[in-house]
Image (cartoon, rainbow, N blue to C red; front, side, top):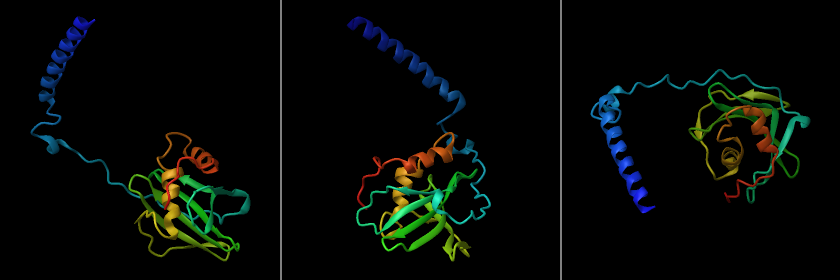
Length: 181
């Protein structure tokens, strides 16, 4: 048994040695290095339209498991979409214990851990934000719900049936996101 392991190790070393020499022909990691690198197209956000205002039948109560978070978090399933630009867009309702609601339409870039607010709710309709900009998702303050959404539900993006699979995550009991923010 030991002899066969020695023979196998010898074969692997010899074939690995040949593979290492063959890399020099293509200079994958050699002297030319970054000179051969050709960047793809620069990321560009797609044009964003506002969805219909959230209604009770389409709202999913999300178990974000944040200690001392004063709101119930609801996501409007009808507004949830993953764009060609890989941004997850959703309408979110933050409902206080007294029933007051803060409503926003936001986008999340999983790969950059950033969000953007496109609109806020007022009088039963969305009002667009004048100059939306991408901001870092933070795990502190009232906006910490975004970190919980990002880490436990929206990201990483599913490969197929993205919207449906994210909705399934939102409806499921929260087992993954147990951190205290």
